[in-house]
Length: 373
Image 1 (tube, helix red, strand yellow):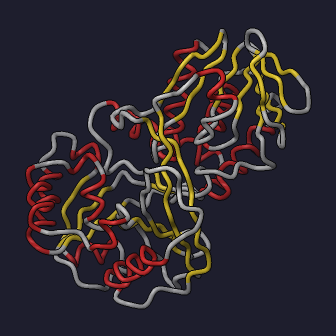
Image 2 (image 1 turned 90 degrees about the vertical axis):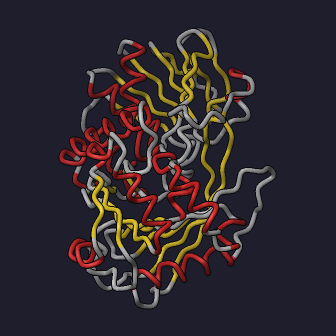
């Protein structure tokens, strides 16, 4: 079988991986020289802890298993089983953490409530004041800026993979075929469009208005910390954002402890991961209303800096990069992904909604199973 994959972000690359793993030939088409969208502009977190129960958690756990296997074969991914800590302060935040421990799927997530001393034994860099920390053993990380490159290197070694950069697919022509802006037609047994947040142009032409929206966020990265941040770190605002933490205790937190005004205005949470070079990737904000701003604003960065410094008990290293990114999210946020047959032999897969890095291996596996690869 020959599979045409359009889009070289992490979702597209994992579809290529699944096809090659199953013995098929892949032609992989990317409109940029390299993927430039959300697959690079993220934390690199394999984030199990906050996922909704049921299909979303099952997908994240399966993806976590697949990531570990791929990481063992492709060391340049930088896959590491670091887990996560969410420090909490005060009885309302603590109540949400305790409610999470009472979930029937808490063990599958690797939840445990740690004292400050226990949390610092896991992550000594957390020298600031907090009352407890929710530990999630199942969370992991990869290097988002280089993951696709590492996967592509392994795919090329198979001898069944061709990468065609700087070609924009303009048209679906007949069954199982697309035409690019060089005028070349690529025909296979299946075409999978993994175009991420690019929902206009070809996608609108073949699929119409899909039930997917675009979301914008701001992030930053620092100089090396100078010590190991041995886990990823979140703050209690993540409880308000991630569905796993919905509970009467969360309602009490929302009613009794208002978010910082900046955090509320920008729909913020803290997520923080250390990169292999020692720097910290820190974010993020959420913007849903179009048109998106074209510039980044400083208030969210200042808020994140204050929160991080309160956990670390020390000044944040110099910020060396700031950026904005846009990802695609299903308008029904309970759906893991939007998967649609748009023409004979042509499927669209998009909208994982900030879960692309976490869930992409399992999303691609499901596509391959459903299409009978």
